[in-house]
Length: 392
Ligand SMILES: Cc1ncc(COP(=O)(O)O)c(C=O)c1O
Image (tube, rainbow, N blue to C red; front, side, top):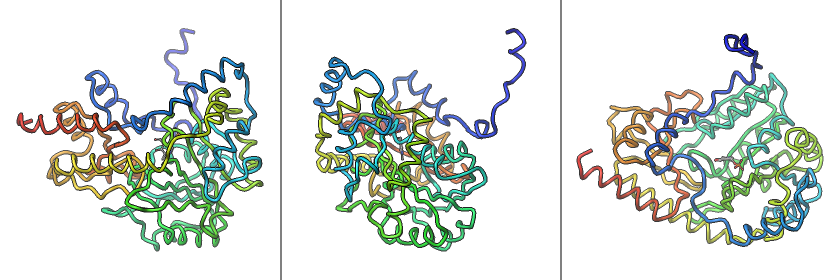
């Protein structure tokens, strides 16, 4: 194999378009230094319910160790269906996937061809652009405007064309914390109808909506419901991101196609874990977890506002999207700032460049995950203000 060392292997243009994890250098440094990670969306709160873990042990011991039904264990589908608004038909409208991550790829691969266009909001979840690249489609970004990260309806309308095959939404959103209003969804519905477009909506943070707001799912909006694919997950709401359980919700005709693609991508996720969650009946108290998450938002908001960042409170989800320019006076971009903060305090935040189509737009923003234990956030506070007192 000596000859293989000099030649780069041929890779597909789709694979070549992927940028890889933009955080790997910071994550490595953070790990070496035992830093507190407020960067990744890995839930440190809530704890997985004890009965789910016991049920997983039991499912394996009692012999559920082979393939599950490719569309997902029926009991689990029934449990998920009952949590949705309006409830879905578990037989014909739900497919269990390997997290929302697989669900997103399956939704795109089922909907778009190379050369088609996908409309999405900018800034957004980094994985969206990557999944669109993998599908071979072209992204059409609609800018969201600071400080409250809303779109301009005229700019939204201008992004649509006869090539638009899908709109990709996320509510509550990573990284902006926005929850799309019924009015905004109505504007999207009008365009989706006019251009006959599928609407894919990532609702993985559906349990975390704050300040008395109510999440409007795309399935509740006339004009969107019948053309929507919802991407959901148990990763965040139940704090089991390592179990890789997500789902797709769509009408029966779309679901047939989604299931065919899903059978090719993964053929299904871990059987005993599906059975465990089905048996444990998704017993977490989600409204209580939502209220607790709101308190974590307030705690994080207090710390980083006091530090000098300008932050519009997240309406939902698990992230604050913070403007660091009042703090840095433009002296540092967000990547340099994240390095400096890591050096001085051992706290890791995400520089927001990769969340934007044009990374320069992220130079003054960082993303802060607050789905963490309250004590950990208190330790962050001690580290930041301790370091300041020491003149760092
Ligand atoms: C908006 C959004 N969608 C999907 C995911 C991934 O979900 P899953 O663990 O179910 O693949 C994340 C993870 O951070 C996310 O922020």
